[in-house]
Image 1 (cartoon, rainbow, N blue to C red):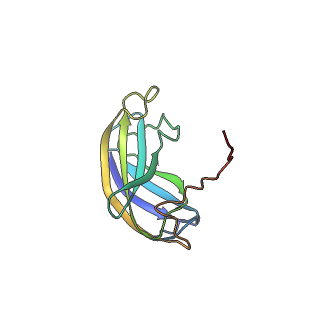
Image 2: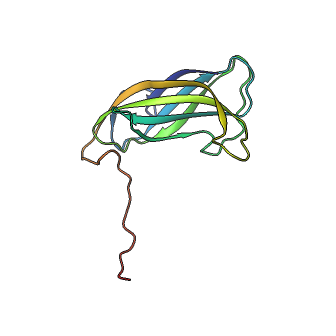
Image 3: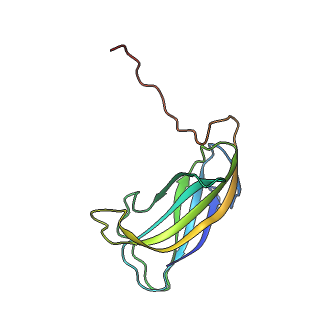
Length: 144
């Protein structure tokens, strides 16, 4: 397995490296298999300039447990992405792995390829949100 590319694109498929906070994009990871590989998971993580992992996901975490690649097959995996991030520079790392026990534990895998800091991008934010805007809302407040 080889991670061929990582891109951030808009709805029209145009690649961007300068993003607006709270605007919809897609993270696209293109992966090629050199041999047949069953139970593949493709994922990514966003890190700050200092290397702090902020958030990420994978096809397995999203519930897609039966992705199989045949030798020489290339697939583009698209994830929705809304960068609720503070003003700054960030990096995306992406990987492809073979899950060993996809039905029991999605975090039990052999990493086949990992592209560390595959793409850098910047976020322009209108407000200071800390590292990420979590959209947490107070639901109740009561004396006990």
